[in-house]
Image 1 (cartoon, helix red, strand yellow):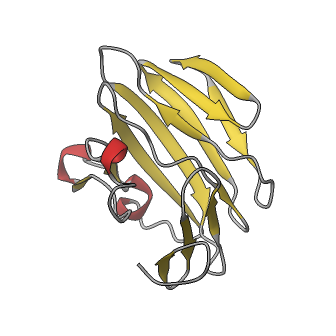
Image 2: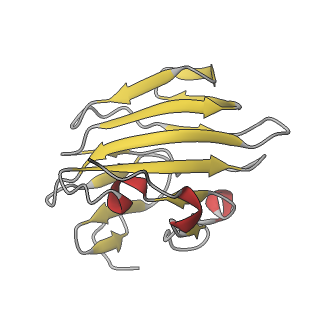
Length: 149
């Protein structure tokens, strides 16, 4: 029988690995890698808490990774190439690999928002950030011209 995951025992990672200044809107986000805690290796599952005013990430899309988000509690604004949509508890969205639809979530409310993030773990994935001079390669963050940060 599978063991229940003790969420209190799963380390919270606060902030972002983005180079400055791109990390700023994500500094108060908190992720708990619950998929890792369960021993999952084929896909990742995170419990994401977005404090008021916090973004999930810079707007981005993945070359080889599918993404799925489910709003557990609170309210966020999904920003994509097509505009903005409000998502509330019970809403979900998905982003297929290779589709150049930059997306992210912003908590514009006055309360914490809690989401479940699910994504594949493609080692060859490249993440593109259409709004800023940033690209994520398997080796780390680079400028769009390829220079390392």
